[in-house]
Image 1 (tube, helix red, strand yellow):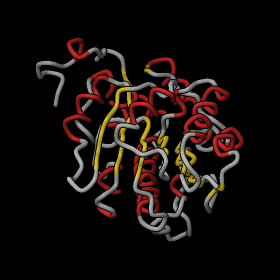
Image 2 (spheres, one colour):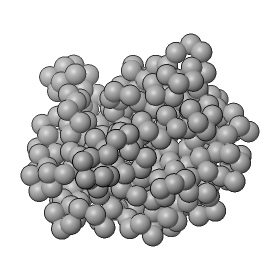
Image 3 (tube, one colour):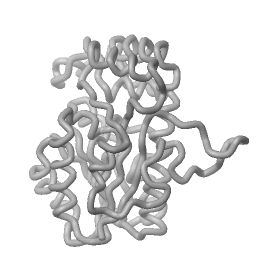
Image 4 (cartoon, one colour):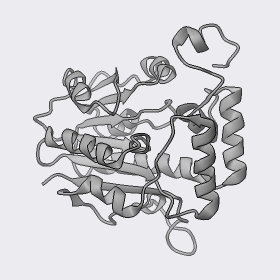
Length: 272
């Protein structure tokens, strides 16, 4: 879809003149669901920090590896994916249902453009269930109530925050959101987090994040390893712990060993 097609923009409740994270991320991944403002800011960030494209790709690959582990070895059949973003290849339901067709997935976002695409494209297979709910990550109670129409929270569930907790700017608030959700799922459930950090990537990465907060929406809060670790308190971190998401159980290593780091932490943990 392009900006020249009818129904875009104000009719759907979003501003195409201000760069938005979901659309810029789509641009970095080579998608077409973005507007000139998104491409302009996306290119500015890429010029400042060329590694941002590697971050986007590494984040997506981390999602695939984490979901394959959870649906496969861990036997998880329910996924609550908060902060869906624009659909691309190998979305959570596609990865999970490829392994376990009876998997049930609920996507959560509150962006009107994501809503339009999700309802059209995030369609699972008959053996399982795939749903999308329009809700804000700041309100975990509403998320749980709406998701309960598809998921049974008496059963183990994977709660996923892939590049979305950074939009909850206050760390204490973000931790409280995660705690609320984890408190409402049983033992054997999992938490999956990918989160941007200023501890990797050097000054160019930090400068690109500042540029983003000045020119795009929503603003982000990068966090340190210790701050990200707070999301997992009381949970059992799986090996290799909190690492650059490119190095979380990589499918293959580079000639020098582990894949290059990207400034995005990734981790998976189990509720005991």
